[in-house]
Image (cartoon, rainbow, N blue to C red; front, side):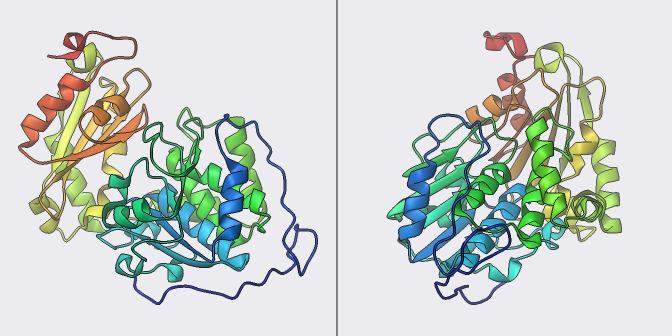
Length: 370
């Protein structure tokens, strides 16, 4: 989706739930508690001082990355800020996310200034996750990082990073609240998509009472959970079902891998999906089917990209830290969900990953090598 840079005049108006009008919106306090080290006040000062704000999320965005970025972009525009929002190539919105409000505000990454006054990076633990927008991020006068990944501690001049947050959307919601921006339906839908995505539709261990409280507040402004869930998880072209069938037929179970906790894995080559005209972004749900395997703690799907690299997605059920394994192999993520990109033969890539997988509490790498 390509279009002109989004902009608006700097005018603050009264909005429902925001006292006052004609002047700066009154900022609402946080509901906390928040981990120490999140520099909310400096983030607010930097945003206030910026005439134009560039926003970026990671390449091949998921629901949390794109939903959070679009929500924050709309909130900032509502406060009178000129904004440019984008993500690095391939600049293609995943089919499952094309329902998100605010996509008309996205701009081609080529239009992002090379050295912006202020950039906000969302759901990205390091510059490499931004792809072609890594340059503008590292050249920005100020870079606010809003994220919930544990890595990348030297990334950004202002860090709103909480590894304990269930999703980046949780932190964006708090930033919007502190800015005093009203929570509109369109903003809430982006946040809900991010929250639902990174909690696995509220199934993962990161689903806390606070997560449900936030979800409830988003529903109060009109978000329909059945609509979001259908778009995220319950729609696919028929060709996807055929690709899924092939991937499941190729699946291999290694009961002794991951310290005896089990590993199930499969591959989806470029030729597999090209034959069915299935784009790469349609493959996200394959691993959710694979991880249902009772005999395996870890599930892995190796997906060949259009460029011929392998994107290795991993999931665990709580007893293996796949985040550490993927970080050691050049990627990253969370303890129970992580990924990395690599080149080579899938069998060799699995050999490397198998060696890196260790049950929680294991200190000897040899214990997890088969």
